[in-house]
Length: 217
Image 1: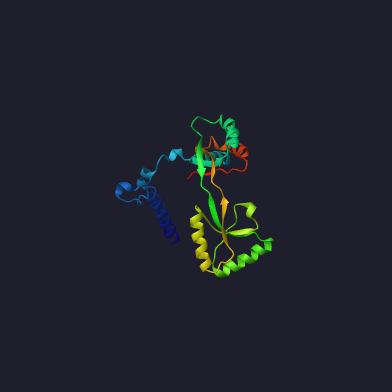
Image 2: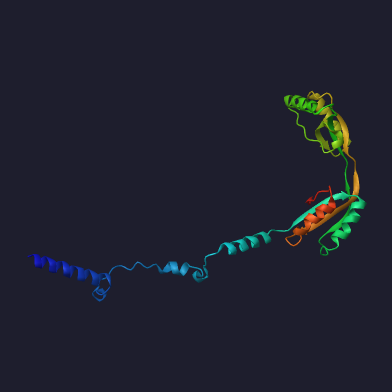
């Protein structure tokens, strides 16, 4: 009896092996195919896939940086002396990459509080203004320090109207002063600073001194 059972197990193993290997397919006995040919059809150039090294990745990042769009920068108005210094520095730049054009920057008036004898007077005034719900801002003209600006305006009349409104809110010691006179000069414009020109900006900023390059408006 034991021999018969062993023989049956042996025959069953042989039959399973033949079935799993597809040897019985002609008799209609074979396992189901698990292939998915549609996935192969969806692959896009699988032969082009490769592992990227750290050096390759660094080069790719450099390419991404180079692809940054160009930007327009400007500075000024600049006085004639500074404009004269800039022209030789810009002579090595490509044609059409810069221009120096006449420019006028309107004067600016502010509602002003100051000058206070000491900086702690500014802090006390800030506390009072916060209680009144009045906003303030730092001064752009250092000659007016220590003090506060309660707003800047393009005309003296506009600043006077703002002072009148602030007086109705309890502001008593403010007055209108001209923070900056009208400036006449030339404006530097760099219409399309790209990766080829960006390395030259540091040298140009040194030549500009206190004048700031800012986005064009």
